[in-house]
Image (cartoon, rainbow, N blue to C red; front, side, top):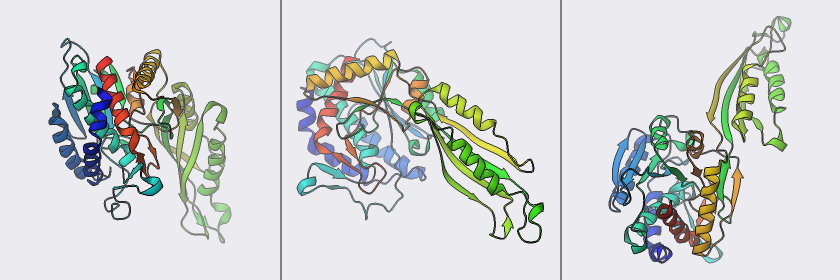
Amino acid sequence: MLLAHTAAALPEMLEQLRAWVEWESPSQEPERVRGLAREVAAAFESAGCRATFHPDALELTYPGTRDAVDAPILLLGHLDTVYPVGSLPAMPFRLGEGEEADRAYGPGVFDMKAGLVQALCALQALRHSPRTTSHSPITLLFVYDEEIGSPRSREQSEPVMREARAVLVLEPAAGAGGKLKIARKGTARYRLTAHGVAAHAGLDFALGASAIVELAHRVVEVAGWSAAERGVTVNAGLIAGGTAANVVAGQAHADIDARAWTAAEQHVLDSRFRSLVATDARVRLEVDGGISRPPMEVSPASDALRARAQNLAAGLGFTLGAMRVGGASDGNLAAALGRPTLDGLGAVGAGAHTADEHILIAHLAPRAALLAALLAEL
């Protein structure tokens, strides 16, 4: 029944997806994201939800039909994308043709507006299916700034996460087969700044203390902390410094990304960054930043969610794999709060954050049905 309902709704799902993709919503323009939130809220209200607008998140509540004391199931997602306003002319929403007729393209279509459409269809299926008349309350939380690390919305989302009995994350699935994401690395960002002594490179070279040279040594040092066998990575992605080729650099800095599978490894890395010492005593090191998202580690409760989802998928006629991924999401925050969390329940596709971003249309209805089945059974 659920799959039949979601399959019949596919044309409406694609039209809804077109409307939300064509509403550009870059993280850096929160007013545009809030405008999309109003559109999304109206659609979910028509499906029986009540909307609450927080400064940086849209919260939707769908009443349960079981005991009122049931803790809600939380569906977690985001409304922002990485694409600046004006991206549509170069990469409009479109349905593929020929060999690509199974795809839909557009900025944010995969990450993660199709996941929001699947959630809407899942609620509509719950509402109209006679076999799902009993379910717990459902909360949906769509934040406005996930793509930049959720710096503003985190204070608004974490209290909602704490109230949830389980958290289902609508982020895109992993790989062409649409695997669940059962674990994610924790992320940290650091800015390492070297404060040296500027001097004329010809007249007073010996009086200078190069911030660039010192920073280069430290970048090589921290890169050596990566350990592929344990999934620990340290990457200096940006570096800048100095004022001119004939000046001993007085300052330089590097922006560094650090990731690990476990909180223990993450805190070891953090301590090592805080303990960096300059080779040249005349150079002062400064470390800013820190851990931004803790890891999403596998727990017995989240593993049980994984097994439940895979069993339901088998009943719907498809195989649902599972894997660990290096990227982070707000699912990391929910898992760190001790909530059973299952990620990657959104669209199947590829090309996130690129001009080739797309979804595989055939997976929209089955995954919406899976989400509805999970909501009915949890």
